[in-house]
Length: 205
Ligand SMILES: N[C@@H](CCC(=O)N[C@@H](CS)C(=O)NCC(=O)O)C(=O)O
Image 1 (tube, rainbow, N blue to C red):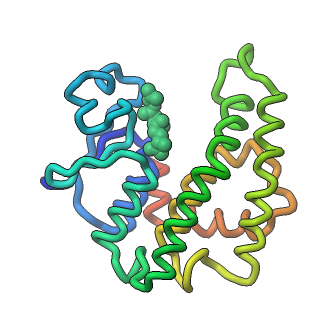
Image 2: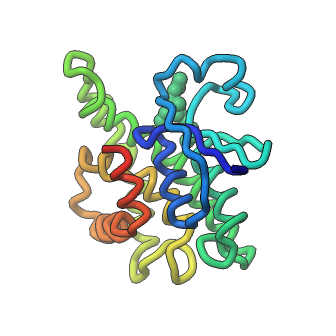
């Protein structure tokens, strides 16, 4: 099989599983945990230089970084559906991925870690609150971008929605107050009602 995804669904690999399920592309799944020491062995570092998951190997070509993997997969297998053909729309897909990674991910991680993931004795509510405060500007921008529209780019669900919604995963955003962001809440729900998203989430439970 040419296409192999490494990383169990309880890691950021879930983002790529979601993409692969959307595309319906056959793939081999190697559900290795992000805690597995094998990730730091020379053999694995050859395909994932930082020893992290997810990593995708497509016929000898290896790529890590979940959102980049999704852009690659969408362009290769979903051109005209999940990946727009028009250059300006393609550019917006890159834009949303970079934006989500840079403007949201670190803040969300701080909230998730300090309100949920860390043992109670190691949680620091000040760091969680700082993360939540840092999220206000990007959330307000996303709220505005979704005003009067169902999807971020064009008129259908694309890799832009998948990548941003993957960062705003339900298990993360349940720890932040989304009260005033009605468009964001509704859009996240729309994205996660998709059968591929449901399947990917099930694999993590
Ligand atoms: N920005 C990377 C982050 C990759 C990452 O940190 N993955 C975690 C699992 S969610 C991991 O493999 N951690 C193991 C480690 O950092 O040693 C991506 O989006 O793929």
